[in-house]
Image (cartoon, rainbow, N blue to C red; front, side, top):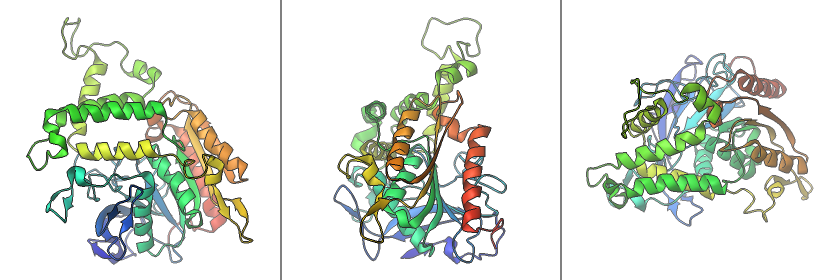
Length: 404
């Protein structure tokens, strides 16, 4: 295993709130086997860490990012200059307190912020992978994360937490490695991607592939980028992250920098201008092919599929007596009342499956009109629930108030 500017070589006596960066080359001794039948050998996984790992390595929290997220969860993003995408959740004094916990967040494989993905260099050709990169799944992402966690010498994560696609990874961790996770916080997510969500993703992918600058995915080798297609994909997806009440409250039918409509196709309405801004700013930091690969991974996600179509079976383990038993992982499942992308019934289905195996699970539907993106926004009840769950289980595990 080869490491570069890697957390493992850092002095663990640094301030608990410090951020450390690195990447690892994983799968060098044994290639990572992928669900699609391919393998990845010597692949990069980029990550950030926050806080300190305690002496018995019991205070590690893995944060899993959503579709357009990355490893910059609690610090200024190097491309956009914006604050970390979850700085309301992660940091000193936050629900995931970096004075207490050692937080790990990696860019998923297939991503575009340093982890192996279609924009990285294929060692066989010396050129960007483009569409030669193997199609990956949520389970593949988690297998790669498992290798990263193992490299820290962490036998069991205290908690795995994430929303949306991050929540899918959380559930996959609990299914694939139930003995490696003490507790889980899957937020605004589901055990499988719905037909409606697959449809929205297909619209985005077709927008990208219809852009003449996409060049059959080979745009990096041809010195061009499908920015228009990717921008439209982002605009369409961003609508699904919001709710109608939130859109109406923020924009209504207000006009953009004008007193009357123009009877043309400029951005007459504020909501149009907002979506165009979202699209334009997105292409500055995201790779179009990565968008194709990651949305496809979400589409393929279906925890019950490998367990006879019965979701509860995904959460069964083999007990000490060799008989089936319920998962030992403790869960807090959170949904939002106005989330129509991952509506509350999807979370309830997960809870019912966990109840069927007598798992330790709590469930909260947070009342808010902020839609799917509520897990990233200032919704006090949500953070109170997360803090209560994390602090309660940290006390049961005997994790000190400050990492030592």
